[in-house]
Image: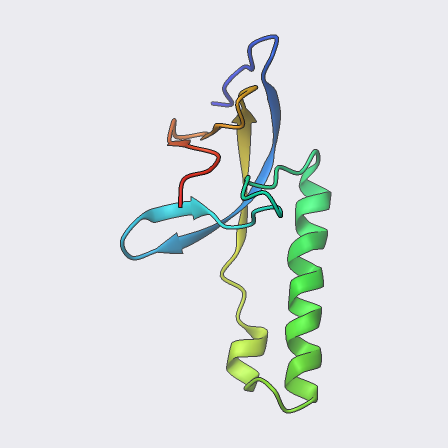
Amino acid sequence: MNPQPSPKSRNGYCIFIDTICQGSIPVVRDEKGYYVVYETEREAQKEIADDLMERLKQFLAGARDFEDAITVEDYIVPVTVKPDGTITDLEGNTFDPKQE
């Protein structure tokens, strides 16, 4: 079930990764430390693809091993963003915008 945003909230997409200690968490932040929220799923997909292409270039240059270069652990999650930058995923998990 996709949560309906309040008038001041908006829907978007974040790139997540699974961690051992914290579980599923958003992984991409901007220069101010806030989570990057993409307006469309396609924009998030393009970010993952750009990162993969960079890792493949590093492999071809000899700076990264093959398995590391081709492994993609990131995935896209629909989220609701509150005006303060807090995001909530479909399972109701809330992520503080500046939490480290």
